[in-house]
Image (cartoon, rainbow, N blue to C red):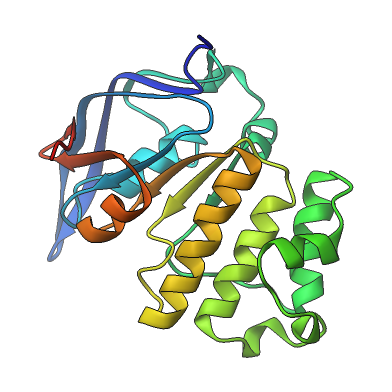
Length: 224
């Protein structure tokens, strides 16, 4: 059997939180362990502020762990060039951010950034972006359409892993269903490893049989 695709061992992370005019530090991850194999889709649930987003950000080094080890493909993430790590490990955020310009420009930005030779129109098709939107100003899109643009841009780096930080929570019900179905399809078709943060237990159980809960700094597998 192949080794883990993503592995966290005894990971700790403390963050500062402002309380009025004061700030205080609190440990959001306390010795977290997690093993994810290639092609798995796992979900991470937990209350607001539990550290779910922090955990994702540690994997592609948008933040750094205080201690512990995080590996991608058996290699410590600190041994990767950050640019190469983020090419392998893409991320889609809760609030979609588009750049100035057309939809085509936004998707092409990912292609230029990673120099992967990806086909912009093919990426748009993968993300279910209608052809007639390609030359529209991305700023004028609906939130759901913007999220699909962000997904297409993430795919431009031909990632092995996608980190999804509540990718449907800012969308209305109809748009959320479409984006959820899109991501599940892409995961299956491309064999992507996905870590999907969600606050919806029903969504977690709908999309995966590998569901975890992060609370009080501890990550535990949900059963039942």
